[in-house]
Length: 324
Image 1: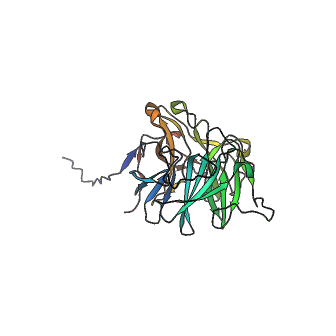
Image 2 (image 1 turned 30 degrees about the vertical axis):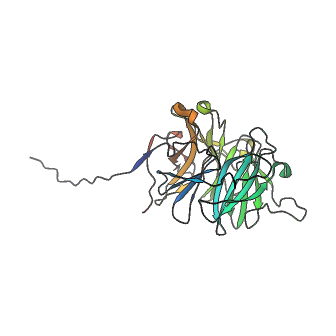
């Protein structure tokens, strides 16, 4: 009789299913705070900007809102808070937000607030980018990026993606003596919104979204990318065509379950070096509930281009790994 004496080791792998937040929190932004927790903020389908907290990017707990009715911004009249973007520098949590009115693109601007805690209270510092003053229609979907000691703001929604430089405190546009910005550069064409920049190796990758964001089960939103060796571009597709002329590479589209996957947060790298993309999408059978939060593993090709498995939101995936 033959006896198999080989030793088999069973490794238990923890997984997760999308969505990671089954509640409407569109345009998510995520930060790993000084306390080791991840904090996620989203467009205010929950009024005053919802805040969720997690240790592992999979299990999220609702913790409240960044503002209250008493502390929410008031400048420019009654607006909505969209697409928050959270960062930590100068010993403060800095929350950039779009102060917007649907359909009124010349009164849709970018504001900024600060707090000593990721849970707030956030103290509003007012308008950072005024659409009319800077001359960019639909000045929303802001994204902060620091590179070589300079602080940049990228912003724009279907009227071009632009870049400007901020002051050292990140609360104002850096200006010349005549009051005009030291930098105002158009980076992408009119096809894009929801800018997000990630540095990997020698390249900067500009992630963005195209299509319709907010039409429920029929939303055509897609996540796209281009790359550059300079943070200010030009950002090119695989064949060298410029995003300034609306070219890009598609990373993710909808499928039979999900519609409109897009507007991703800054990529989060786990403790084994895997990059994770967090974004929103409509579950087609529950589209009336709004845009849920989803997550997928980013796969990098040998020639340095990102993708997700099946180019669409996953159903079941191995979870990120973080040391306890």
